[in-house]
Image (cartoon, rainbow, N blue to C red; front, side, top):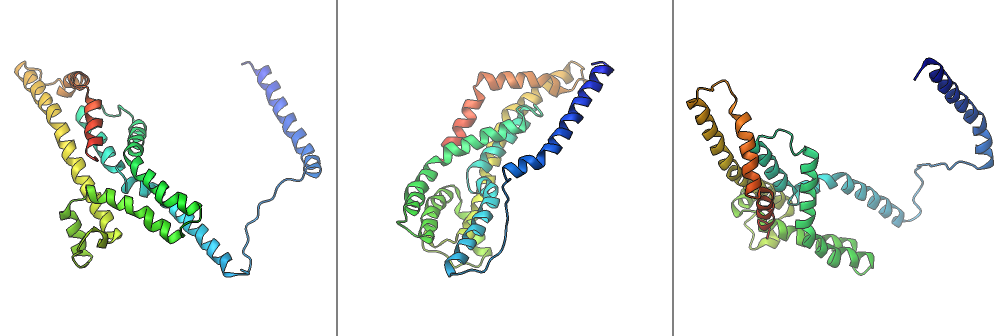
Length: 255
């Protein structure tokens, strides 16, 4: 683009801005622009206060939604396993983090779909049809989530937090407080994810050791073993259909 064309384009842009500025009052006069206001008024009845509190509670839940999605579902275990797998392969940023997070998110939706269908059938739809109250909907929705977490939580981890919280020994799972169950579930997820990550590291670590030993015996001490072992790791992972095996083991671990 030469200087003359650049000056012409600049001139057209400045002319358009001036015309828009001059016509703005006319447009606003012919068609008033919408105005958004936020204010505080005196409540006329107790129901107005209740609605306001419900809106505040809803906004609070929406702000905590990412944390709830990460910590109260299978997302934590899936993401940790994928991270271990990438480090075991030694591929640095392949697959990219965004791709791994997306795959972990969709696997979480797939794994948690029975729980969410139960919540929709027994809690959300009856509440929308005004057959149950808000408190009943919350208690009903909490049941399938607690059942899912109980299936993945070790009794040892659950006993640890019951002891720390000074909660009497419960007779059954229904007496376990939710604020005690959640951290026990997270710790159990970490444990299982690290166990699977260790098993993923073993074959690739053995391959690294074999390549390093061969290079040492050939006197190639200056050649990084990772550079040679990486193609063999990828070949091994593809030959055994690694993604199929990893995803299958993750999903079956929640059954």
